[in-house]
Image 1 (spheres, rainbow, N blue to C red):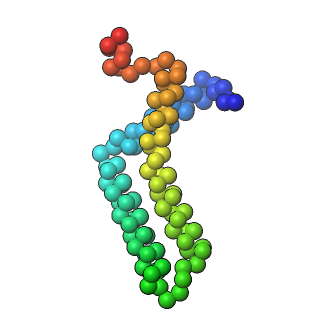
Image 2 (tube, rainbow, N blue to C red; image 1 turned 180 degrees about the vertical axis):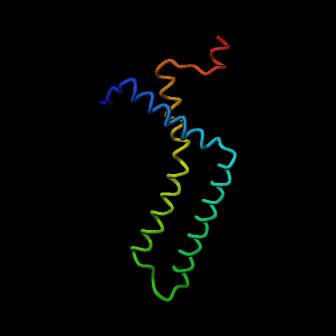
Image 3 (cartoon, rainbow, N blue to C red; image 1 turned 60 degrees about the vertical axis):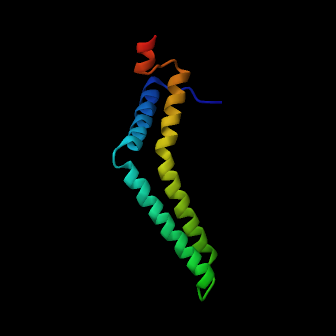
Length: 105
């Protein structure tokens, strides 16, 4: 069962989600996404080279590190999109309308 938020908690939640959503809309966001993709590709090359051509097999801790690092980067990029969806759902559930919807009504 979901906890009922106080007015201040609700406001703080909405501000935080709006701020996270704004990050995705920032003009530099595509550059960050690109840099993360490049880093992921570099890690994949390292793992592939070590797996196929390494003198010693990769240790489970190394595999876990790379896997976790990539999962962390994916989570980092998903935070803004997730925040945007959560904010939209919250506003819809509570009857808030966008400016376009208000103008059309």
